[in-house]
Length: 414
Image 1 (cartoon, rainbow, N blue to C red):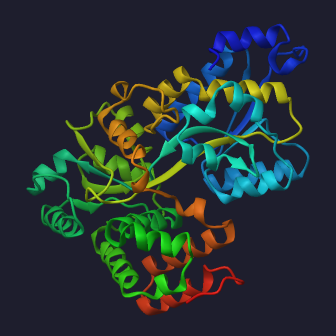
Image 2: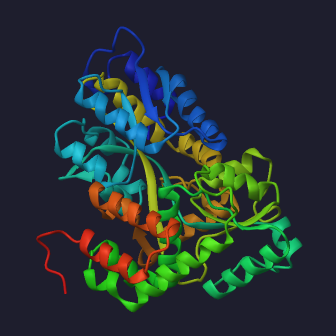
């Protein structure tokens, strides 16, 4: 991987991509949704690394992920694309690639040895029809269990829960102590995230993949899924009245203040703890799964590069954000696990080391729902789960609705 200074020198001498250097420094017009405290600090690490390599960074931050992606898509369609746009590991970015709207990064990937330094599943996920179309930024697991050590001690909970039974026992003790048992922001994407946490921890890997990868109607109608949905709904009794509509980082702030005990959230929450000066193990706990057998959900952030802007500037940005030094600094601020396997895990914090360890256990890994489902079916799942969370509905009706909505129309179901 070329160092930032070497990349800048190559650009200046016209060696980058074998073409003359642009008259002006490459300008990165970047659309993203990193607006929370830890996220802002992390994106500044990317911007500074790009500037040091000779680029100019124009920050276009949007608070909502859905809005940021919509802005990027609309600008691409209107012929005014940004230089780069943030997406998740999802079907959404693959659709843009298949529509011919994105530049490939095959050259950057080959020069950077991405096939060797990225986890195999991640390298495969950024390819569409044999070509690389995205620069990976972070690896996240979206359903960590975070705990406030001060709150657990006040409630008499000796350690973070290690099973669903222990989870409900801990929640009861936190409520009895006058604390918010479960810090949850009542937004549809957070409702689906919480359901995902219950599905992997209670339902296990087989049910998870049957329901979301195979999209089996039988899995959605099964007794095992019924129990998962009932446990998910049971958690509703442990959130506070201010939960509806609350942003995820405001829920994390309740743990930071010791007012709440537990939160299921992605490892980007660690950036908020770091911004507050809290230390893992000393002030808060991080649990990647309630049991040693719990699946590890793999998600992450990407930069995609629409056709139209300066390809040399895009390649420079792709090189810079995946460089070892940038990844180390960005991940420390973001809370994510670096995308590179060649970084020493000893340099990571205890939570990130746990995540890196799980990523080296292929049998434990499962893709995120957004990766497995086409955008329309992912939205249908999110809406159905959020409606179930917020309204009184028979669980059997929810099961039947999802069994009908998620499978492909041409896929035969048992």
